[in-house]
View 1 (tube, rainbow, N blue to C red):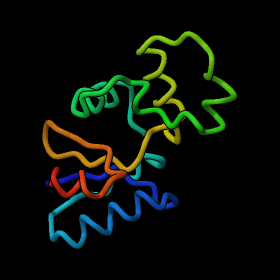
View 2 (view 1 turned 90 degrees about the vertical axis):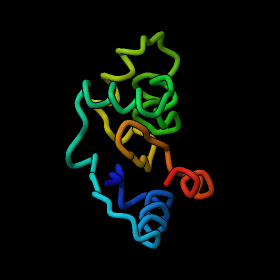
View 3 (view 1 turned 30 degrees about the vertical axis):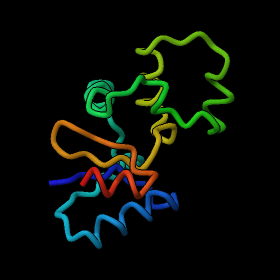
Length: 113
């Protein structure tokens, strides 16, 4: 079953959710702002996405700019920041078993599911 890390206030996330709903796929919605991922869950997600931790960061978010931008951060530092401030996580993310995709582009999402 698909899982979607969803933020209802995000237009791209709502578009992704609508797309998956229309596809008739079974899925589970994970509201990651209310139920944040811990460091280990974030590490597993990053592995499924096959990206570097910095690629999961919404670098235009005020929290990132105020607290982290321009600092020399290690991958573990970035993951800790994502765990502490889940609003920094790119969205939406669709997970299918051991693979995942950032579902901002519906054409890529179509190929994924």
